[in-house]
Image (cartoon, rainbow, N blue to C red; front, side, top):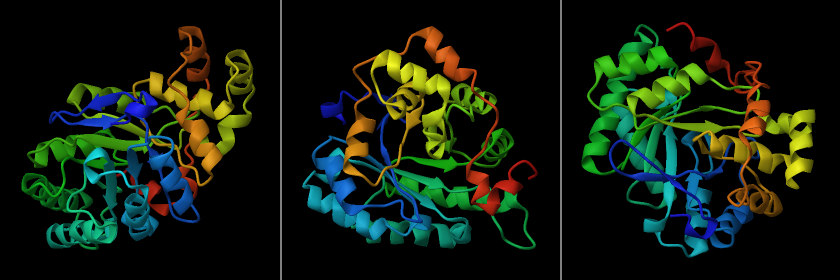
Length: 289
């Protein structure tokens, strides 16, 4: 996968390999049909990330078919929205996601948030019930791998205690200003691949003096510096863009290396700045249950 990009693959605990660079999508204008087709057909991107929440699974399926690339060469990730948590709802929602995308299986299916939002039941119990549904989907081959998104260490520990399959992936916010190193280390210890979204900090990292200085030094764009830094940290990275030229730019990160000193200079930018909680009320729950 991703051979035209010289994109490395990261091994999962079940023996599969996920391309380390992918194309992210989102709601609120975070999807563009032409950009997806261009990413797959012209840039060699083979990893696409979406979710039911984003409302673009149907359009994404159309873009995949238009690209002409065989399904077997693509890594497709979608996510289960928390309103569909619970055994029956989760299994139904996954099959509906497959149907909207026009595929028979997903390469990776994630629980989108740790907050179950079901009155009268603990989040832990609903997470465990939902995860058992994902385990069955995994056993049935509907999902080649299963994982979680936005889970913290204690959520992962609870899931490990309550269920049978350790998540193959945990997808969380990761960029120069938000580096959850304790969580990343826990994932490494447990064999959970660490995947990062918002690698450009919603554009806020692109104007930081350190990033600009490195862009001049390496004769690269600030976005390429941020993505390369994430890649060199071993993180599966899914920058989002709706513009063809930005998609191409974001893919050109495998022909240079940041020095250890420059990696450290970006690492020092961490200030625990979380961006996703500003737009999603579910974030507030994560440190409590």
